[in-house]
Amino acid sequence: MAVPNQPVRVLIVDDSAVVRQVLKDLLSEDPDISVMGVAANPFIAAEKIGEEVPDVIILDIEMPRMDGLTFLQKVMTQHPVPVVICSSLVSDGCETSMRALELGAVDIVAKPQVGTRQFFEESRVRICDVVKAAAGAKLHKPIDLERLKKNSADVILKRANLATVKTTEKVIVVGASTGGTEALRVFLSDLPIDCPAVVIVQHMPENFTASFARRLNELCRVAVKEAANGDTLLRGQVLIAPGNRHLLVKSSGARYFVEVRDGPLVSRHRPSVDVLFRSSARYLGKNAVGVIMTGMGDDGARGLLELKEAGASTIAQDEKTSVVFGMPFEAIKLGAADKVLPLDRIAREVLQICQG
Image 1 (cartoon, one colour):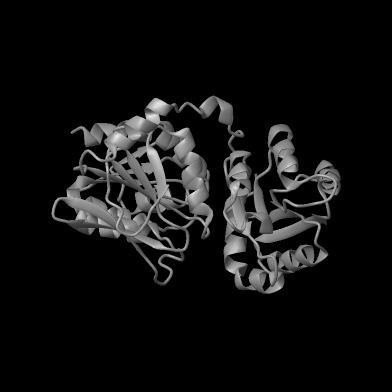
Image 2: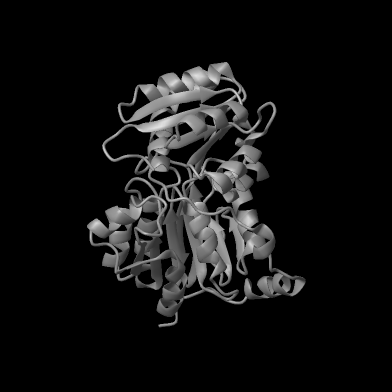
């Protein structure tokens, strides 16, 4: 854990000398960050950690002698330190990225195969923000996937039937960022198969959300998919905003549906939680239940207030269970949250609200 008012101490682990140098130069320009060391492979990194424990590790995946995921697992089970994955192997949203998050990585930066230096320079602000958010993150234990998998053929068949029954009266709209992948897994795992429709904005790079949705679909009773333009909001179904696209809720008569749209960054993000919440305030009003979860920054705070003012019920995740208490705190500060709850109580409260 970083010491308050002291620079965040970062260890960079990457087999590319160019990446190590570019990252070191970039991070060193931020007065709130100090690069304590670099390592070309996990074995060198382990020696450095033995001498001084960093506040944050930036970790590549493809490296000689030991791959990054193996090292991540060892770190999280033996000597937990916030880890940010920075790799070209996760740029296509493949299962590797989901596995990294399951093993305890706080966040992911997808670097390109070529043009690495230009990419880092253009992404300077985001990378520094990610590192500082990671420094204050509360770590969770790696997920036991075998314990969580509980679906059967019957469940899949029931999903298909429920998804065509009717449009819900209540709609649950959720916003999350850093730490949200784990928070959303916990939240969605607590929802029954016939729960009201759920629409989610999780800050994630382009192409990651489809893989993220597939993984949640395997682990939860509700059906989870990446949202497509025009998708109807259905009972028992969860729609996740595609990376790099805004997601809005709209209505046509009694039908609620989503619109996937390009556009400028809003609150420094695309997709933006504020965009989802503001459209929900306009088209759903009191039929919405708004939830803001763990994340850095203030995206979603003003939107949650608009939801509340439109008659919706609103909930913020509490500080103790948030990996980063930024977005919920800003919403609470605005008076936007009706209730502030720990993560494991949010689903129950949402369902009680929906049941009247």
